[in-house]
Length: 381
Image 1 (tube, rainbow, N blue to C red):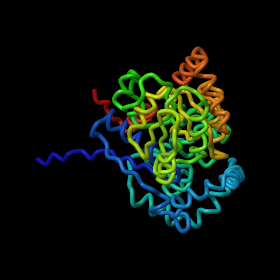
Image 2 (tube, rainbow, N blue to C red; image 1 turned 90 degrees about the vertical axis):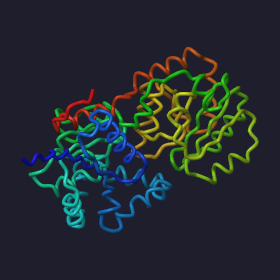
Image 3 (tube, rainbow, N blue to C red; image 1 turned 90 degrees about the horizontal axis):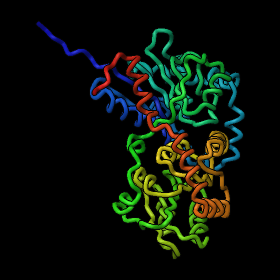
Image 4 (cartoon, rainbow, N blue to C red; image 1 turned 135 degrees about the vertical axis):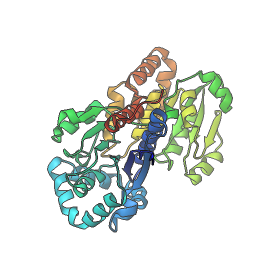
């Protein structure tokens, strides 16, 4: 007799490297699927812009760093294209250009379930798939200010990070039963128990008894990072600085040549950021959704010093409304906040508690379970 091994369900993730958050969200969900269901599924990530979009859209990832350097223009284009009717006009207008690419995309990557983590994939992929299609999940990777392109009523599930994003989905006519607040998926190493700061600091070679400020500018070291770090150093506060420059080698070299008054550690791109967050006392960062979610999971008070106008505006509001941090766009605002939190431990403890309450470390596993239920998988014990 011929006993064939049953084929494993295949999940295809559509993402794009326009900003780091889309790829890392997809990777976090794939990691959670592996942790919860071991080898019961196969997964695949497809960069739909780079591999399939017609020119010039296939260069979106390379153009993105330059586009965000014109923040006012970025903000204007974000708001001008936002709104349910406008989103429909965009997709209808672009469909004749994108049709062949979209159909080639879905044909080349057959799936038992599709997950999109980028707003531009949804309507085009759904239209190319037609009626007879696999289950389709959209995981929204913007925290609050979510573009209407995220929300297509044909999707089976829309998984959003915050209550504000859920309200936005309902405004875009999404049926309420399809929309679920799950949090923002981040890598499992950002979701581990906190551990003792003193133990982590010893392992990392950091000062044991100083207030430690982690300054992060994202993967590219964006924002007025150097000026902010130097203002903190010159503030007269008794603290240590940990500065992560990402892939920005020029910034790293500039900071390494600076004469620091306080103990200061400077890193380039690092995989130790989860430990850095758990070992630090405060984080100073731009308002990227992934970094905010990771900081909340680490119960780390947040000072936001830069944002991308448009989609990151709501992230600032969210952090403030949750009492998990502040908006401090000028170096003196950052110093003022640090001074207050260091001199008022009760206030600092309240902010830490608010971070704990707002964090959703289980987000990626929750999404994995929703996928598992759709595919009839058994959780590994």
